[in-house]
Length: 574
Ligand code: COA
Picture (cartoon, rainbow, N blue to C red):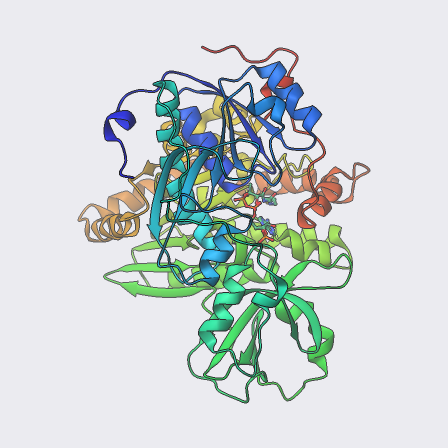
């Protein structure tokens, strides 16, 4: 179905929308941002228990319940009385769990998102809107955060316009392209290293990337496998381990080889970790396994053209442990020494950065010490960026940024994002973490003292448009498609600008004035004093929150910054 432009163009009246979610994940956050920007009144409830959902509906009295990420059915007592829109990551007519996993396994050339009304039978309700997109050969989580999210935002906006206009949704019928599919079985994804080709191995791992991971064996250990990509040179006996490099292990297939970056051992309480760390004990016995240089692993890539240096750092999930921070800082130092006029930090395609690496910290013998080392390494990286005095530093956010990752970006002279980027510029969701990364210097400088509380205390995701409007970032430049080209044109223009020396002189003056007012090292020291309390003090909230986060513990209640209907004095519509 083509987009009904007239419906999209017409302003949708303000609706009270209750978002019912299994977790406030990236898609839910993006929808929250988009709907809030359109003036809708939003509240969020985690899907914990039917009685809690009913209570939320009773308290909030929504015009519509929106379920972008749900794992259970909505109670009948709700959908009978309030229209409930389910975002299904499948084409019209597709029914069943793990729709995107199956689309990847079946090598679909196109896939889609459908907004359905909840009825008694799963995925069987009338269709309010849908969108399709061409599939990419990529991990499921990457497709979800990019194609699925873009399609879902469009389809939800259209569905809400239609709902507000009194449109009647289309009942599902025989002629729809989708069908009912069965759940993906373990056997369907099991890799046979003696017969599967590289493309088969990648498809199986991609189909389960993020969650649940393909179950397989590596270095003799049963694990869930994630974060795979093809190797283009090494060959060996099918199934043989060929090499290690940085975080990843290379294993031969019948027609090539694949790198596996992350694994979760099947042992109880095991975490998703870099493969070489999770299997360190087993690998110690394989002393003849060749170790390739880490600087070729695609995790930190430097390139240069026309006076502009570019650093990509697509760290898995945007998580930056001590070694990641050090590597990036070294690359920044190297770039500075090359005399480029402009340096662009591009992060990764899904995440720019999500701050310190909580999984590595959790896995350490002393999580408190590991937290301290990680935040020091992160601060050293920020300091390195702040020392880039003779060049113009641009943070180009092609992916989302959260917590310390957001503040890392603010160390650049210019922060640019496309309009699909979601920022979470706050730390408190992680057990009231105080935060560092020089935020006490960087944030007020951008949003003013009054803006600090607005940014930090709301604890809500911010869209790039709003972030630019409040001065947190410098520009939101159009959609994701074309963003990097726009950044490229801008960076080249800055590098070629005859006024460049004046730009740098003004920047140096600014830093000199800031240092005179308060040395930047003092901000860092003050923040770290507070962080030390978070890590070593009597209040274990950070450690508890981190443990729950890395083990993906289900939510047990909805925090009040999301569930406005549960506040004693809910904010009044303005
Ligand atoms: N360290 C380790 N892993 C992290 C991470 C971090 N700092 N931030 C995100 N991840 C991982 C998640 O565990 C998840 O892993 P999965 O592949 O097993 O699913 C994946 O990245 C995606 O995270 P998710 O929470 O599903 O993404 P989102 O887009 O829905 O939410 C955030 C984004 C930033 C709000 C959320 O990931 C978050 O709160 N991260 C922690 C940020 C933080 O507190 N950092 C420490 C202080 S600096």
